[in-house]
Length: 306
Image (cartoon, rainbow, N blue to C red; front, top):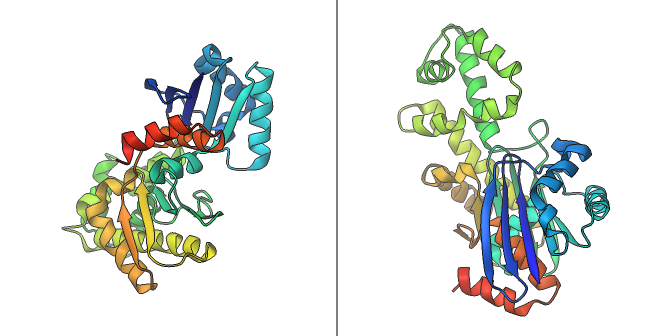
C-alpha cells in the first residue's frame, strides 16, 4: 500500500510517497499553496485535483497550513471524500513539523519564519503558544522583526534624524522618501511578506547597528517566552528538549544567544537542537504510529535518528 504524505504550506507543497512497509518511492516539491484558509474551498478543491488525483486509491496524509481546528479538518475531509479519496488523515502543518522534528520523543518545537509558534507534547499532553497571526501574535518572527525595524526607523525620522537603519531600509525599497515605503507596503498584495522581507537585512546589520542588534535580541527573548508558556502549560519536568525550524533560525548564531539567556532567566534547564526530519516525514511518522505500521516507523527512525 502506498502512503502519500503532504506538507502543504503557504507558498509550496512537498509530496512524499512511501509504502506501508517503509520503502521510499519519491519526494518532490510543487510551487503551489495548500493553505486551506487562504485558498478557500473552491481553490483548495481544484488544487487537490491537480496535485493528488492519481492517488485516490492510496492513503493520503495531509499536513496543512490553515487546518489547525477541528471544524476545518472536518470540512477538508468532506471535500476529499467528495473527490473520491477514501483513506485520509488530516493534521495541521505544525503537528507534522513537530513529529518530524522529534520522531516520537517529547519536547517543544519553536517555528519562526514569517510568523511564529511554539508547540509541544509531553506525557500525553499537547500545548501551543503563539501562532495567532500578525495582528495578535507572531512575536519574534520575520514579520515582527521587520515591523519593529520600520517602527524604530520612523521614530528616528520623526525626530528629524537618520541612521544606518533608516538608510538601509530606504535602500531596500529603492526610495528616497519614506512615504513611498509606506505606499509599497500598504498597497502590496502581501503586506505581511513585504514587511517580513526586511528581517534578513536586520540580521545583517546587527554587528554595525545598535538598533538592529537590540531588535534581534528582543526577538530571541520573545521566542523564549513562547517556549516558557508551552512548557508551563505542559507541566514539563526536568530538562526541556527544544528544537527549532523556520527561516529565522538560519541566523541562529545571532538570535540563539538571547533566546537561551532568556530561558535561563526564566529558570529552565534545556537543550536546543535542529529538527531530526522535515515535516513531510513527520506526516509519515504520525500515520505509522497511529496505524501501527511498525516497519515504516522503524525505517524512518533508521533514516533520521540513527
